[in-house]
Length: 91
Image 1: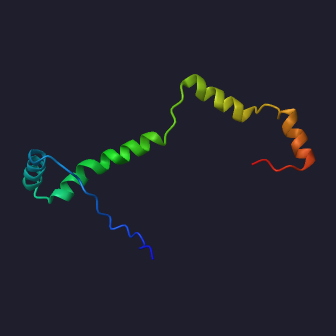
Image 2 (image 1 turned 30 degrees about the horizontal axis):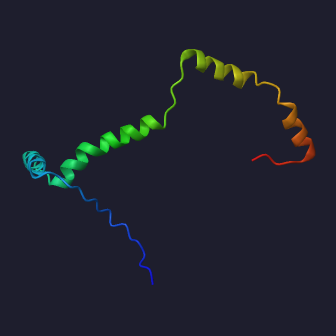
Image 3 (image 1 turned 90 degrees about the vertical axis):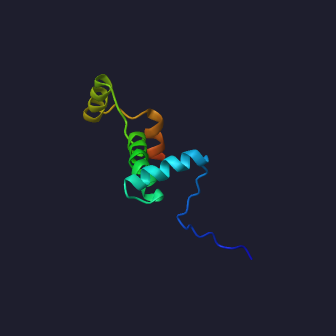
C-alpha cells in the first residue's frame, strides 16, 4: 500500500562548510537561529519575484490602446456572430 505524502514543510539545503559557517555566524550576531536568518533574507526576495511576475507593464502607447479598445470595442468577427446564432458555446 503506497504511503501518503505529508508535507512537513522541511527543506534541505546543502552548503559548503565555509558557507554554513558564515551563515551561522551572521545568524548568531543577529541573535537568530539559522532557519530564521535565512528565511528573513530569502522570503522578501521570493515575494518580490512573485509580485514582479504577476504584473504586466505597458508602455504609454499600449495603455492608451487598451483604454481605447475598452471604450470603443471592435465589432465581433463574422465567425463569432455565426457561432452565437448557431448556439455554440465558445470556451
